[in-house]
Image 1 (cartoon, one colour):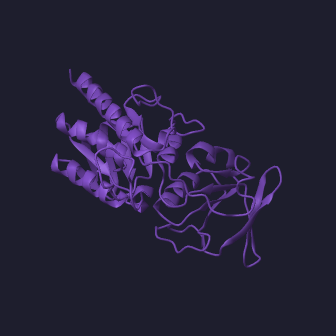
Image 2 (cartoon, rainbow, N blue to C red):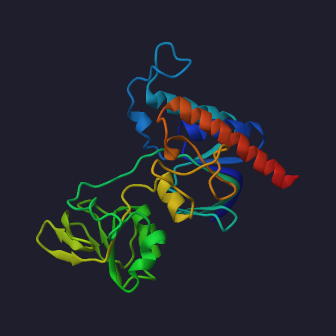
Image 3 (cartoon, rainbow, N blue to C red):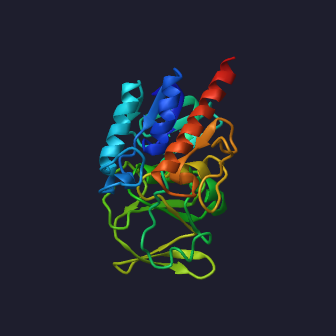
Amino acid sequence: MSRNYDCIIVGSGPAGISASLYTLRAGFSTLLFSTQDSALRRAERIENYYGFSQGISGEELLREGEKQARRLGAEMTLEEVVRVDPFDGIAVHTPAGVYRCGALLLATGAHRVRPNIENLEALEGKGVSACAVCDGFFHRGKPVAVLGSGDFAASEAAELVPLAASVTILTNGQQPTADFGSLPVVTTPIARLTGDQLLQGAELEDGSFVPLSGLFVALGKASAVDLARAAGILTGPQGISVDAHMQTNIEGIFAAGDCVGGLLQISKAVGEGAVAGMAMIARLRSASA
């Protein structure tokens, strides 16, 4: 399946919804991918955002924002975005198909899953990676594993299969929710990672050992930073790097909200979404002129 839109927004939080209000009112078709797992949904009461004299829950604020976008004509989907391809007419890949657009906004927040596994943090950059597209090349002909159990993990594994000698799925105790084909899936929890200067393998809680050259962490869903790095978009210590118009180093791809770092507040995310929305409109109008 392949569908085309003027604008695609990955994320339906304050930044994504704010941008959509501008693109929709400007007459551009807009598709929003909703993650449904925003940290904002867990906020019991928000009292530092303009316009709510009695405060508002995070769940209610998100729900009202989505209703507002739908009223203006937004399409929304719960499909999981596993990859962004900036060299294919700006293509967004999900397990169900490919969506293409003229302008893309990454706005999934700053959520990042890091498992509590001994030595994992110490071995980051020494065999432990968060990007198969970025680092799979360094493990050609060697055994690797993907840490995860869902579609994000399956997508990372697919990138590694043509390169590595073997690819194992380590779910760390979780039941698989994606189709991993013929790849071996190990559900036994990981006790620790071994290695000093470089990763050597994973020791499991049942005492068995999986020798590894690389371990690719792909827990939960791909964050905006995960998608950006795999697409060749520049990132920094705080998140995705953008210019004054919220555009990344790749023309037509924008980012806003917590995923670009700085003050992690709703008001900032809404403002950056507005800037990104206006910049997306300008790009699309320029392209059609």
